[in-house]
Image (tube, rainbow, N blue to C red; front, side, top):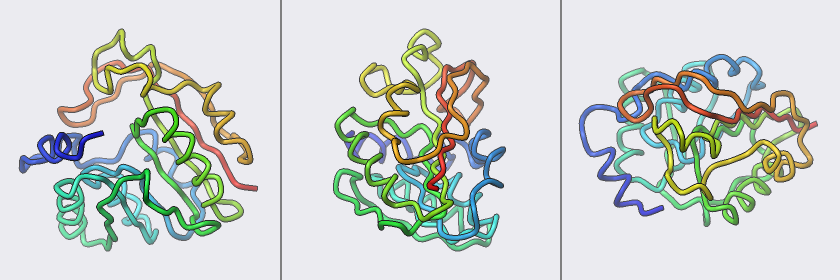
Length: 199
């Protein structure tokens, strides 16, 4: 979870995971109600910029200052507004009952921090708000097409259901799909997908 690692990864002019939004997010974005959206561990901004282009007021947080600077550059290039925060999610305050959508795309934390963040996510959604997540499962270790090598950072649907108690699960599945996102994610991948709504 070292910011210097991510600053180094994002140092080039190219976008390490591409400039297009995550495919799962793009297919489900219409289910996010109008209103503010928070993108967690947003990297170089591709998903946040996409959502801003759909008319949301978007804030993005990431521990990489380099990534957030590139996110702002991408927003400027696309003619949308984006508010960025450089910070560690261990200390970042998710405003309670505020967000229409909270997004976590390939955001992998140690289990204790993930549980802490998910508690804040559940509290942070306004009624009708949506939490949208895609992450690698332990089965991804057999594919080698991206993601952490530490199995404790990978996610399983059964654990996520417990951590997101209080939200209504509309999508909850573990699948294998092609993930083609820049040089960082390329090939068949084992993922878990969540769309959960605050009632």
